[in-house]
Amino acid sequence: MSSLSPLLRKAALTLLGWSVGLTLAFPILWTALVSFRSEADALGAPAAVLAAPFTLESYAAITAGTRFTAPFVNSVLIAGGATALALLVALPAAWALALFPGPRTKALLMTILGTRMMPAVGVLVPVYLLFRDLGLLDSRAGLIVVVMLTNLPVAIWMLYGHLREIPGEIFEAARMDGAGPGAELRHVIAPLAAPGIAATALLCLILGWNEAFWTLNLSAAKAAPLSAFIAAQASPEGLFHARLCAAAMLASLPVLGLGWIGQRALVRGLTFGAVK
Amino acid sequence: MAEILLEGLSKRFGTEEVLAPLDLTIAEGSFVVVVGPSGCGKTTLLRLIAGLEEVSSGRVLIDGRDVTHTAAAARGLAMVFQSHALYPHMNVRENIGFPLKMAGRPAPEIAARVQAVASQLGLGDCLARKPCQLSGGERQRVAIGRALVRAPAAFLLDEPLSSLDAELRARMRLELARLHRALRTTMLLVTHDQIEAMTLAEQIVVLNAGRVEQTGAPLALYHAPCNRFVAGFLGSPTMNFIEGPEAERQGAHALGIRPEHLRVTRAQGLWPGRVDVIEALGAESFLHLSSGQGRLVARLDGSADLRPGETVWLTPAPAHLHRFDAAGRALPQRPG
Ligand SMILES: Nc1ncnc2c1ncn2[C@@H]1O[C@H](COP(=O)(O)OP(=O)(O)OP(=O)(O)O)[C@@H](O)[C@H]1O
Ligand SMILES: [Mg+2]
Image 1: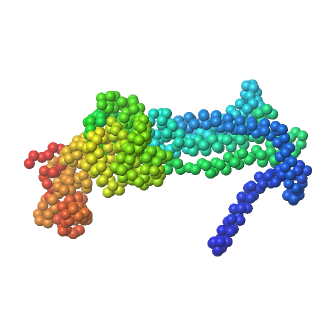
Image 2: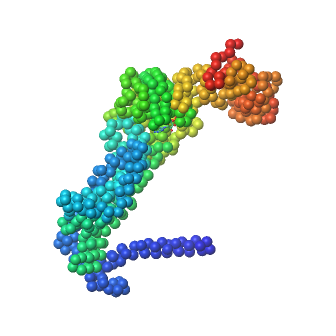
Image 3: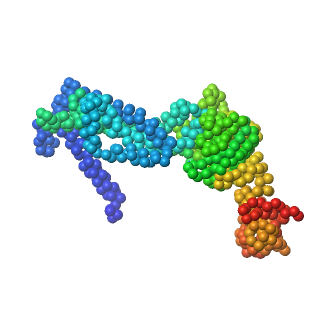
């Protein structure tokens, strides 16, 4: 490497970077390509798929009537509801853990994370039976609760990390300056915690949107979100390859958008300069 | 303006006693400085008075009112934090004005007060900046300004000058003294800098490992320290301590003599010594010497016409010789 000129070296690195990036992105790019092919063309050899004519017929087919809008609305409700609920539970929890640590705080945090490590399939049967007996199968409310619960450990950990970064003396200073609990929350805690809450909400939204294990297993038709909608293109009347790809593309777009907004909006380091 | 009374105040973290039960009266309008080495419990003491830390035992009274279990916001005290603790999302103007805003003062009054305090502290040019755009010294002055902007019952200052350079520190020290004379508000300042303690305090409290060693006026402590710790902590360079036969001859375990009370002569004196290093500061010089009594430091007015390696004679001024017993307690001055 050292014998190469800097320019050549840079070119080689650029080439390497692009090839790794393209390799990783290839399945997504191919999915996008296939989604714009007719069902017949989509099943051809790769070269044929590449050369086949452009068409929007798969998109037209999957969005006909309420075929797409119903699961889309379900996804929005489930991901949004689960996120709101997770924040509602995680914020006070993270707050207490971060600002009033006790001797068992560490152990508790590890336990919380540990529940996330457990394979979900291990509790599928009990959860399924619980849902059946409570009449929650194929209901949005049930899915909101279960998606919220899977995201809760992540939400608590992320908020905990953000809140821990805010030096506690800033809150104490507010108290010394005569701020009561309400004023402290409004003028100091909320503005300082806002970026962390936004980042956590964003992650929960994305995770909730992408959640497939529980939604596939606990929903049928009424509450089915986009993950189930994608899977449905593969059955039961046979495999619709192009439609499957089109559904996957449509379902991914909101998440791509959120990710794009997120990386630009969530700048960190707000607390820099507050304390020595 | 308020009197602060501490009765048997103590603090334990778990099983570790950080502050032993202490009694202290901070008179109304006085300037009290708590001084002690790092980790002796100075910040903890301030936090107990401020109400930011639960007491383990004892009571805090402000103007006779028991506030031991009163919330920090309701005690009416202003505090400068050792870490500054500025509001990172507010600019300097908003930071300094925050206590007034919390007190519900009208906006024009806040603006005028902030302007006055900022110019007093030399912060007039950075009012629109955020804390992250300030130097360490500027941040410290904003922290001081946030306390000064209102009229609290008392000021609690936790090492408020530690981030400033020598010149600014001297100026701010003067500014604090002047401010105290003008406001006559009770001030409690903690520091590990004994010069700050000597120059600012009406009353010094020497704290060591969570215990009050001695309380009193600065010069009283300087001239009559009650033990070796206080004797060694106040004064710079520190007091010379001499142990061994010479001390026993004078009926003590250790002798103490301040550098300025050690006379250096070329002719006959009490102890012979060799000059190791001369620190000439212009107005004064410090001689570091080796002698039969160990290493000693002597202070001379002006510059010394001595050279390193030279042999001189040292004579302690008898009236300023301190004697300590084996436990470090000061023994009474010898008559004659
Ligand atoms: N929250 C805490 N938990 C356990 N120990 C603590 C806590 N806060 C302080 N301590 C201990 O109490 C002792 C006194 O701490 P404190 O901060 O009051 O010292 P200080 O005199 O202000 O020191 P410095 O000059 O370095 O600021 C230290 O030994 C410290 O380790
Ligand atoms: Mg301290």
